[in-house]
Amino acid sequence: MSEKEVRVRIAPSPSGYLHVGTARTAIFNWLYARNKGGKFLVRIEDTDVSRSDAALVQPILDAMKWLGIDWDEEPVYQSKKIDSYGVYVNKLINSGNAYRCFCTPDELDERRKKAMAEKKPLQYNRACLHRSEDEIKQLLAENKPFAIRLKIPDGETTYNDKILGDITRQNSEIEDLIICRANGRAIYNLAVVVDDHEMGITDVIRGNDHISNTFKQIHIYQALSLTPPNFAHVPLILRPDKKKVSKRLGDKDVAEYGAEGILPEAMFNFLCLLGWSPKDDREFLPIEELKKIFVLENVNGSNPIFNEEKLIALNGEYIRSYPDHELAAMVAPELVRAGYTSKYWLETRWQYLMDIIGMLKERCKRMSDFVAMSEHFFHNEFEYDDKAVKKRFNHEAAERMKQLCDKFESIGNFKLENIEGALGDLAEELQIKKGELIHPVRLAVSGISFGPSLYHILEALGQQEVLARMKKAIEFINKMGDK
RNA sequence: GGCGGUAUCGUCUAGUGGUUAGGACGAGGGAUUCUCAGUCCUUAAACCGGGGUUCAAUUCCCCGUACCGCUACCA
Image 1: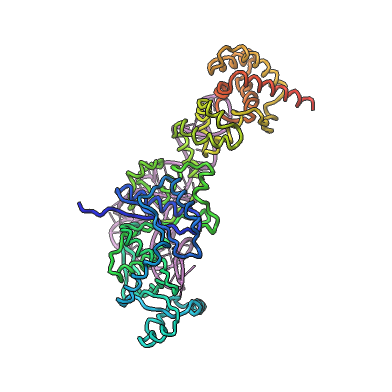
Image 2: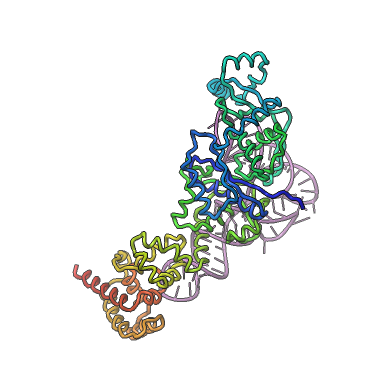
């Protein structure tokens, strides 16, 4: 009955944008919280002032919103509570769990280099752990700067990872890590433990690359007499070249996918399927469904490769599943931006837009395809595709189109059946296949050789426009012949 | 180098001590059709290697190999 409310968090550091790895971790955390009726929080890890940039925070938050992720409390900024870590440091020193280290960064660096050259362990040699009281007093009196190190006890440490199972590490493999810089600022591992504790975090779901930190953090919890949360480490997303996704290697900002015509829900669905599975054959899983069925235990332990082709295929599936009016609302601003039409024009002909969307949507894989495929629906300044011209435009086609114009002109009601009827009649009279008429007309009215059913295009365009475009094409063909 | 993790079609994955090892993307073929898509049908494509345990191992154990990660007064 008295199960504790689940509280999870995503903790990005504002040193760049939100890439797919962090986004996917956020998704897992969010789904876990939503599934358990718990809280999802955001913490900005900006304790390293030199690497953090406050201007980078908002884009990260925006990218999460774009994905459909919301958070339940105001984001916590570590930089704003940087002074509050001191009491924990003092507690650790006073209890003998931490000690002052007077070694300078240069000394440490040198020792590390030497160890590396000699292929020896790179760990801190605990030089300062063994200093006498007097020695320490002396150094303090001399105002020598010092960092604080956690003293790792002997033995071994095991924790149960909710994805990977039991993981054990010899404590001798864990370094006496620095938890507080010489300038008094807390270091990541201390800040994480303190914040997770103060925020009441129950489950830490994060990237695989934090497993070694987990052991360090467990020792901080123990030294502080606190109970550690549950840990779950998700495998890292790899690039097609099998390197982990990173800003350094130029991997995309999640928001960039939006600019490239990926729907947020498709991105969410796809990212979720990278390393997680519902254990049945379903793949098209909208967010609402995922909230119901997500369980952490179904995350598998191996690193998936980010396969953009599959994302695009799934995106197409989402496009087809959305109602026309929703798609129209998303596409309209893009059409205006492309310069095809104006906001006003679209507003007064919303139904026309919806008809076009309806025609186009099953052949669009990205939202941007709507723009790319619809220019001719908004004006007639398009060019004819070269290859198609060579194949379809000739004097015979022009002659047939002329005859078809006559047929079209006499149609009283320019509707699908009548258009189809007129074209069919002419084909029969001329003893040719309908395609012989359809292909040149398609090119004449759209400039391209592919797209929706011709009858639908013609009906949408309207009688006048169709006739005008066909006549223009006939003229074009005649001029072609002159050369 | 040390430590940790992982290993099923090219990719994402399902699955089991005995299966025709399943699905999806991508690829090939076919049907529908005015094209392109879409839809439907269909073909090819995988259990990293070696030892055990067992009547039986892709599945359990060990070793090796490969890949990934960590190894900062970064997060």
